[in-house]
Length: 222
Image: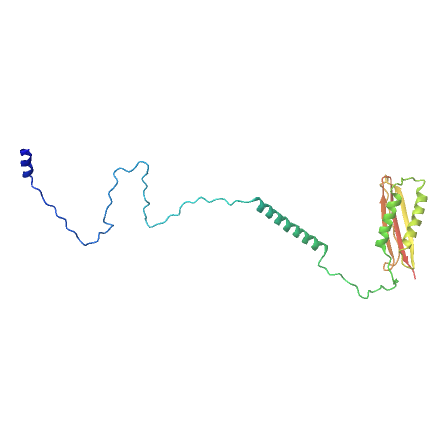
């Protein structure tokens, strides 16, 4: 014990004094102690160095989604436009831009008759066409009976056309009936008449065995 006390007495204790200062400590100058051993669960992440240039981040662009309802609506709209365009084209083709021409004070050629009513050749042609279809649809060609058939049909046609013919018109009916197997038949007609007041209409019909050609002349006389 005495030896221990002697050693302690030989050691000189130095006094340490601390001075307190009033200066504020700059937090930027204070360095935090570095962690010598980083934790295993946390990876070291380096902060990006700001070099003054900002690079845009790579962002994946997503494709726009198309719904079935929107697709059907677009198809319906397209079809509606096409139908409207087709209707416009049809209306333009049916109604041309030409204005109808009205004839005022029609000039009658010298030497021609001037009937108050003209012969309705278009209406008469439709009547004759319907008549031939109804009468000859089931008739079979017979050369022995063709003469009588032609006379009877001509008389019936003249009676039918007379109902729609204006006054002072003479009617001339010409008919030809033949076998359909004969392909070397040629029919022509020629008349000298007044092209202003007179008119003519012609119709033809054929079935499985025969053909028929009818020509009706309407001649006006004063």
